[in-house]
Amino acid sequence: MTDTTLSYDVEQAVRERYAAGAQQPQASLCCPTDGYDQRYLEILPQEIIEKDYGCGDPTRYVNSGETVVDLGSGAGKNCYILAQKVGAAGKIIGVDMNDEMLSLSRKYIAPISEKLGYENVAFVKGKIQDLALNLDLVQQWLEQHPIHSVDQVAAFETECDRLRQTQPLIATDSVDVVISNCVLNLVRPQDKKQLFQEIFRVLKRGGRAVISDIVCDEAPTEKILNDPELWSGCIAGAFRENEFLEMFEQAGFYGIEILARQTEPWQVIDGVEFRSLTVQAFKGKQGECWERNQAVIYRGPWKSVQDDDGHTLYRGERMAVCDKTFQIYTNSKGAYHSDIIPIPPRDSVSFEVAKPFDCSSDTFRDPGVTKGADYRETIDQSNGDCSSSSCC
Image (cartoon, rainbow, N blue to C red; front, side, top):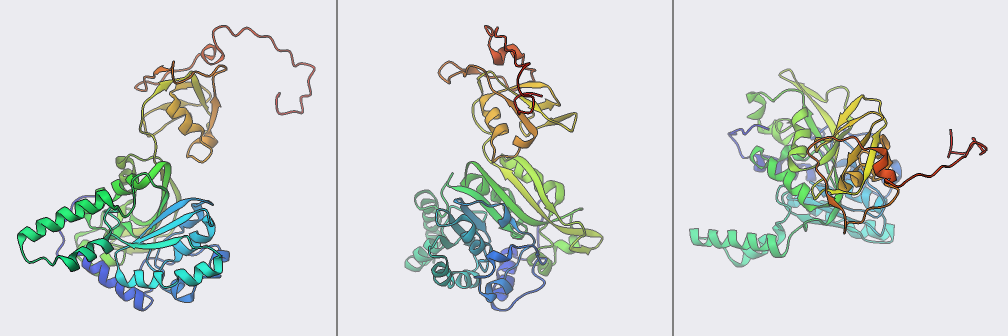
């Protein structure tokens, strides 16, 4: 997203709009979302449902036992839905910077936990582009150390850095899933790169982000950008559709996929179409490459495809891959496994003897490598039962 100088304070506009939304339902805040599983709504107070603002349903992509962070948790609807989905073994952390919304969501922790028979939800105060800084702790420090001079500003900044390091709001590599529902577009343009870096930071290796947000087909006009009402209303800060996916890629994610896209635009302003998009992206392609004689076959239907590391897979061909890529492709919870046929080696190569693998070029794997140079067996199954899955 291009940097834009705005004539108003984005954070102040958003804070005021959502503070009002915590007091009275605001129908114009994001587009209505249908399709939530009604089973999970039955125990939710009507106040939470009425004051929920979003554009999609990322909760449907979360599984039992997972630890989840909800960015911009608002009234808490998604968090309380997920509390039921992940169960007692899971954990939900809602992050919001709006005091009114936090007060609304927190007041229902006890009654909903009593209905569930367990408590696995917490709501914390923080900016979603700075998930290391606990703003409740910042406020406590400020009450004890009021700022009246430049030197005290420096002390405040030092304390914030200390809190990020020693008492992070969300720790690095600690979360299975990060979700968000129509909130990323509310962040200031200059903070959006950091926002995606923070999502990446807090996720565990193999974790994923599932983000619903408003995107546009063209860049918003200057008129749109300079309207604070349109910014707090999830319009002016919308990502251009292709740039939204590129932001995940630039942050280091892989397996980036559009899970849901609104067919008809939610709004059209100055000829620019705005619609809801839900994207999933995975963390974990970083790391060393080792040769363990593995191969994969791409099933098709495309003649060839390329992953986020630049590996090209050709339909039906045995392609040599390093162990890291093999694990990513074949992970049953990952992005690629349904399109991949794994070809593991007949004799496993231990990491103690494995050599570095050159991932800079695409290489076809000779079947003799995976079977082993000394493989000379003859197996006759011509009299077997062809109704079994082991033969054609």
